Image (tube, rainbow, N blue to C red; front, top):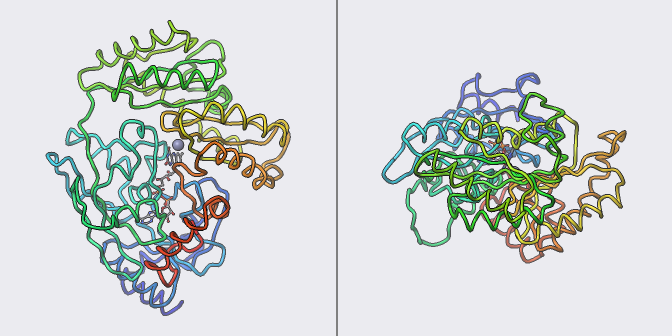
Length: 468
Ligand code: FAD
Ligand code: ZN
């Protein structure tokens, strides 16, 4: 290890090889504070060539490496294990917007760019980069690509995979693959780009990407609807899609308990309804014409939903500023959960049509097995993606409740699979769900994944212990 670290210092300079306990501590604990790993050092390369040279050194000295962007991942993918043998490779210094092509509607960026920085650079050219999630002020585009992040605009624009045309990757051998093509059509053999997207750093280090840009809507307006049940939320989804087509850009479900949690933890946020309702849906409409047009379209559709008694009450924002206030309620749910304590998170997807039945069946199963547990159920209903989180009953400590994690997972994930769903919709597998993946994937699927891993990373140095 000494010789390896000396070599790293010669490549990066002392300032960018961190190895004191205090310096490396911020890179070792995951965002939720669930696990703290150990590392021999944190390496902070400032160029693609430096990344390549470091990975070559890792291969030569057989040092495992853990790529890290903003460290906002939720499945223990971005932190090292407890052995202390790995190094963290932070992409944070690779943060340049390389090029924007407003006619091709693409933008080429370094992997360490913060998502918000990418959104702002697109906006400055009059374009939209539509990926949007609550961690956008600190997560990086490399992390978004490596987890194939979803977020709140998937309904209209797709996951990060759909927003990426090309990649630059440093392979586990330390070679640079320059696949920074801005092509919307390219059928030249196996799609290597798609292999690295969602690979959680287990196949190579993403150093750059060509991202898709879209025309910027003139206005996006939101409404908050109150409903009796998740089944009504599905009726509302169909009604909104029939009325608004592709203008519907967001459709987020939140249970009563979620908004109560937000109100408790963040009392300064708006309280749109005087009375509580069992379920809420946050809807967003975007218009390429005007704010006025978006408000009218949304009011008409909500009017129809009220008339047909699909919703019991609704608030339509009349400006983008009011819309931002409503979005804050949704975005503060994960933050309120983190403040309230630990919980057992599930990031699941289901066929949209089966979501209400899934909740109706699974919630009572959880209550029967863990009486008094609190269900924090919210998510991107339009994409069939629920965050189906389970918090301890009143009076039960976090630690005591987390000891049930495997049993809780089995109840939820067995039900997910019975309803034709997936145990990870957008957060990935990391170390947290590795055993669950092995439990639910078929041998055929696992063997193909292992074959790909062994072919690209025969030394097993790329983020070992994650996914597989
Ligand atoms: P990190 O956490 O640093 O890394 C994530 C994984 O990618 C790790 O396995 C890491 O090794 C790998 N990795 C990182 N950079 C690279 C690279 N350059 N090359 C190769 N591998 C790399 N996710 C969603 O999908 N939708 C949401 O709505 C959403 N909301 C969130 C809200 C909050 C408050 C928080 C804290 C997280 C949320 N997340 C969400 C999860 C997280 O933000 C996303 O997964 C994000 O994409 C991670 O980016 P990051 O830069 O922080 O990656
Ligand atoms: Zn989400």
